[in-house]
Image 1: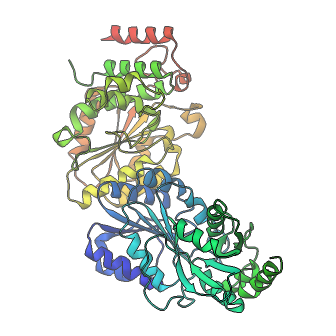
Image 2: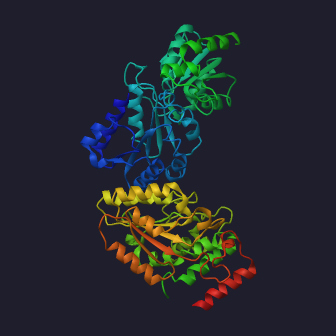
Image 3: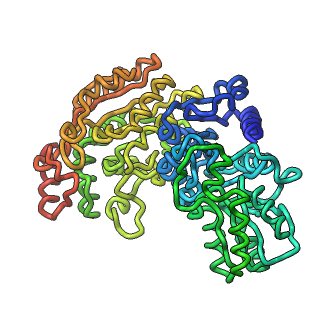
Length: 303
Length: 268
């Protein structure tokens, strides 16, 4: 998934000399090829992320197409005000890449984990948010992001857990992507990023449908409401806080048009407590399959 | 009629501040001569077009001094008399802080420590384009409290942006007191020099000195970014406002407006 990303930006920058890659001293090895091929289009802005985003805004104002890379704990969270005022207020075409989203940096602690990035960006006007789940959605997200004439954030989470889709994804921006159909219509899963695979595993146990949501903002509300109308319960899954992310998004939209229940599965209102592997952290937060199955059973029982 | 005459710019500021019942008069007055010299002799707008692709950039990073810039934009005929007279009325376009949605304003400031970085980005863009455009960034001395300013300064040096000219409005005050008593900055000339800038300190109300400093700095294409430490007086031009920090926040009454306008008229 990360190589799809780095290949996509290299191709974009080779095709257009106005494409610049900015990083705050992150991305060791990831950008080796880019630096070798296009040193003049690579800017390591140093460990100074806020300035980097301001600089990106200035470059965009003068006609360049900056891609700003960082760990999602820093881009967008640390630089939120620069994104709001320097980039979004002027609706500048800057692409933000937040790597390692969610609990990826499990052993480095909360400074490097980001379960609030979608929440803090969603309410800022003009910016779009893409959250791909595998290499096909990553390619789709980069293709879309580089075509935007407005700010866009690409949330890159756990990247080595295999593919969800069988081939390239090609849907309009904001559309949900069908992943699995289900025999029963009581429950439908909506998931984003790394949790789409988890949703598929859960859905298999009850033969329910799964949709991937690569477009968090904008999202196709007509399609979402249509899915909601044909089920009793929507279960959302995300490696992000249940506050302000996909779960909130779905609840906000469907609550205005119907009475479909929305069950939000994701990171609760808490920081990680312990150090450990990625799988350990999923368990700690109760968002691995083993922890989610009982939650799903309880949801069914209370239906 | 002298273009961008300081007393006239100050009178425009007073008219705006009085009609809009607004604050930040002292903050605008300290940068009047800086604005005057830049607009009169340095800023290039091809075709007199504020959005011309190859224009020089003027970044007002200390956005609360924006009335000084509005006064210049008015003299450029990019703002109308109605814009000045209707300042702060419901539905009007000019806000109390620099706003990039206003023609002629490059950045949206107000949250301090933003404009310089955006200006550095524009200066870098000019370099990447092999263009001879300059970026002038007017920053406050209080604004130098912000860590992002120093990030931008380091980056400008690293990228060898000798087309960036930072002008510090060193009026010695910030919102709640004297800069040296709030978060002292020491010698800004020394600091900029230590960060690899060519730095000159001048009387920020001496138009000739400002003009000369700009000329000297622009003649040096040595890869070093430039800084002018402009020693200024907050509230400059009106006796009862000078070095009186309350004019960061005080609104004009009919009496103080008349008195200030008359003082500026007499000083001509």
